[in-house]
Length: 191
Image 1 (cartoon, rainbow, N blue to C red):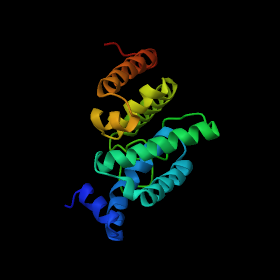
Image 2 (image 1 turned 90 degrees about the horizontal axis):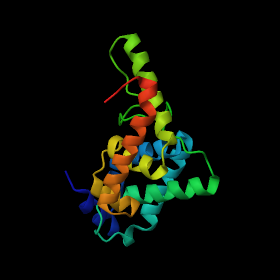
Image 3 (image 1 turned 60 degrees about the horizontal axis):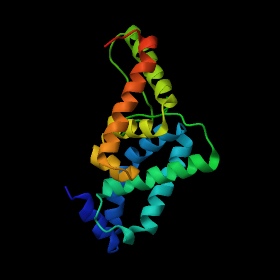
Image 4 (image 1 turned 120 degrees about the vertical axis):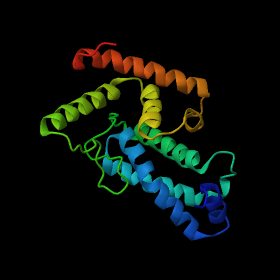
């Protein structure tokens, strides 16, 4: 498989099929990230398109200092922050239209093959986590979403957020502590 960096360099030299391959690889991950951050699948779709338009318009500016993945997420992160500031939307972490399945229509909660009762319990648990996540400090929430839902490394998150790796680790830790504090009374868990 051709690396992202090789594809980006080819695109910088005019190879439009290289961009099409990058778009195919990153469209859904960038969309899911934006949908989780914005809480609006429709707005996430619009911003996702803006991200790739920005990539096309500014492709020559990518110098290879950051990975292509980090470069795309950084653009998405900045667009989401600007959108939230501009529109003053209330930040929601996710909604039922967001999925981790690349080919499925957007949906947040995984579909389980367990019993219907278990599915209801898991759906309720997921809802409680989403609601708790929506109430913690945005920097903590963003770091947790990128790490736990998008699978980014702390180094990638640091580059995207423009902070030190230690700061990312601290935000993830502090965010998880805050989530645990908020969820323990609701889920009846200790530990």
